[in-house]
Image 1 (cartoon, rainbow, N blue to C red):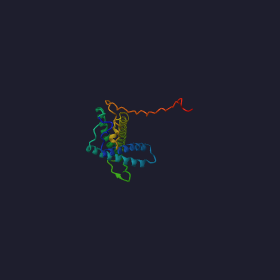
Image 2 (cartoon, one colour):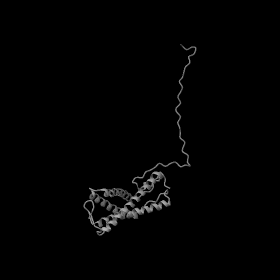
Image 3 (cartoon, helix red, strand yellow):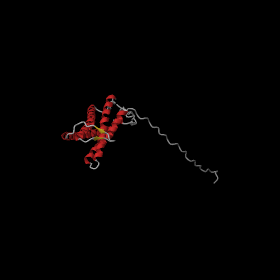
Image 4 (cartoon, rainbow, N blue to C red):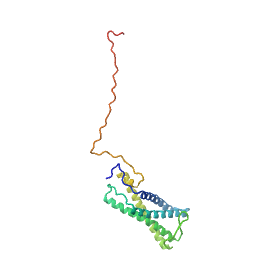
Length: 218
């Protein structure tokens, strides 16, 4: 079991960079998707940004999967039970699948609409499906379902991390941080704490009072 004073083994630097970069892009994509639904005056500008971020997520997801196959992740913490490990693995694979399926569905959706697909900087990418109205509506519904699934999986992942960080305090999040936090180790329960030496205050001499004798001058 991991010692509280020793941070657990972390993922490689490439995995950590890809993880946090994709997390920022996915959060941004959620807001961009909501903005596309309610936007009127800046629809085309938001659409270009939305498509650019989608392509970036697709490329980074492929790189992340290749890096995961090449770089062995650290072992799970002993505080995580076997059922939770199975659920975590299934959730991870589902998120990887959504990272690829969602951008590809959006790419196919834009291709079926017949409009040119433009990215930031004037870059154009080719269509992957023919222009077809029925295909467009089917892909639009699929894109919406996948977006909801990605949002649910992302939210569940965040809730699990918060539970481990704030409630269990097993340093699970430290495996993905760039600087691991160290906590002071508590003394073992079977070893008594060393006695504290309390220094006594220095003795103060009582003032001398001379009693006048019979021969003392008045």
